[in-house]
Length: 403
Image (cartoon, rainbow, N blue to C red; front, side):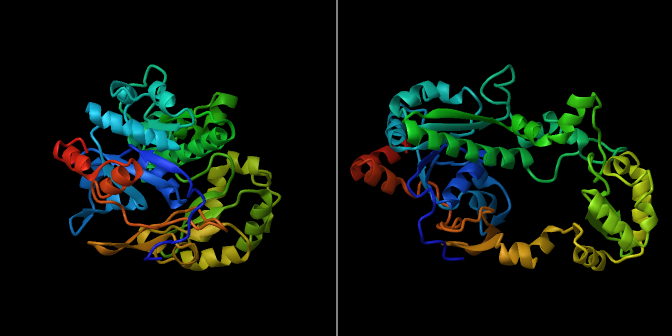
């Protein structure tokens, strides 16, 4: 895997202009590039994507940046200059998809808004991701992952009942919005190739996490009850929780239906609970979750976590230990068979282990093909080969910091 995939991917005939930086937009374009699209990353001369300066660093290189920008071609271009804007519109003519995650209104200030772009390329798919979207009274606000988690309600239901609202440990707003944008632009591209008509795909961090809340939203919409923090317990089925074990670890048990509950009762040596009116149905177990938890916890505290997980899995019950990141990278399923961590070959760092794509296709392999670009690495290839710019002109534009 270190040398990269050589076969073309499912999106090998798709050209993407990538104006995005940091996480949400680059995650989307990373997915597109993993699937084989030719992604041209456009950065500001001299500085580039902000995340080039984000830790952690290996040999002075940002691993944050490198994990998100593999497989991409890198060019520099100053869109605030008239000449830079002119060059950019020439690139737009050749693109299928454009991705940006500026604050709404920025592209319009550059005179590169959707109303301009669609006149240059009527089939273009224009994907944008921002904190609150491009419409509404909050459109102009800055949006970051923690803002999405806070205003979507996610933080209000994350944590323990006697604790404070808690941010999910991973950057869920950014990553899920990147995935949503990827799905949206591919749907729009399908429509564009069928009709010749492009469109704008507008994704908001807050909207994305509001949509992800699902049953939490429905509890309020259907009953008027405002869900709160429940620890690791699930609102709609029980026992679906974490439980302490003899070796001071915790185990996940997910009895998501009555069949699983009956199996668990037999395995615990408590068949009497199967017909207990407080526990016989999922609805009754949810209502009496504290009593159910006490019974299950009393039993799990007599067991070692990994042995118990193995025994429960042998019975067909959903169960697992709680991994830390080091354990994930050694797991035979996740790291082994599914190859969720791979080694990339970087010209200066050498071998660098990164997170692989989670998309597995049977006919067209997705994943690492080429290392992330240095700032402006592909200027000559894109400007001289794709746009037929004379090398002398490119040199002059570089000297003027236009590219």
